[in-house]
Length: 143
Image (cartoon, rainbow, N blue to C red):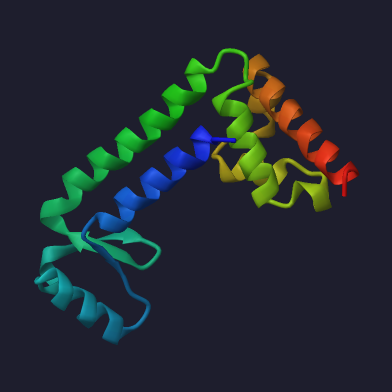
């Protein structure tokens, strides 16, 4: 079955991978990254977690990051029942966060930048996560 959430996630990761940014965790890696970007330390800005990019690319980086967030938010908002994109999102992320072992949604919800309260207070989110949990439990019973 095609998973639209996973396709979007992969597309977003590819966009990030293709952006001219570097990650460094040692002085040698910083120097190598600067060389690859063709800049000096004064010409880069940190994006946190060891990441840096050219100052001249910062506005484009922020714009593309906002666009990815907006695309995800729109896909969630467009799924009024929770049985499409939202279900696919929760199904993938519950599996990714080992729901079948923990039976907890906490890590999944947090990983998606949501709170459990948000999920429980949204009919579409609640329906989607419940449908995903049932599918995972059904698959576990078949094993």
